[in-house]
Length: 135
Image 1: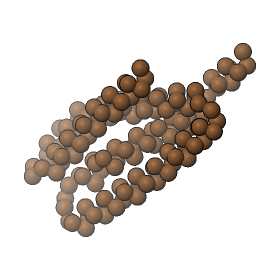
Image 2: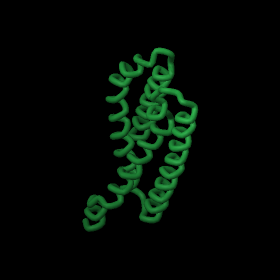
Image 3: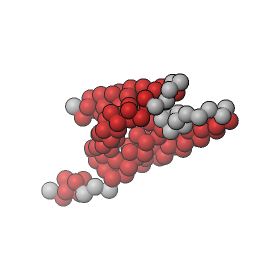
């Protein structure tokens, strides 16, 4: 059930995030600010559910799986950071004045990847594993 709620929240917040990004790219970009008001609560909820999903997943996994998952998450964060910087440089070189630098798929994936890695690390060091093994 947790996985299903995570997938639904990712889908809803991604859809809203991309719609707001398109509103900023329109000729009259002022509508994007109105969209942000509606998207931010869903985005924060989605980040929390991502954190919680990876926290529970890491809490139930073995040590080797946790280490591999955290290393893979850090690699994904590095790749997404590279693409975000490349996208930013391309937009700035085209002299466009829009907010697509900040509101795009790469930013969305980057903040959720960071949330997932933090959840995995917190799940790795949680005390609930120790309580299970001592009883």
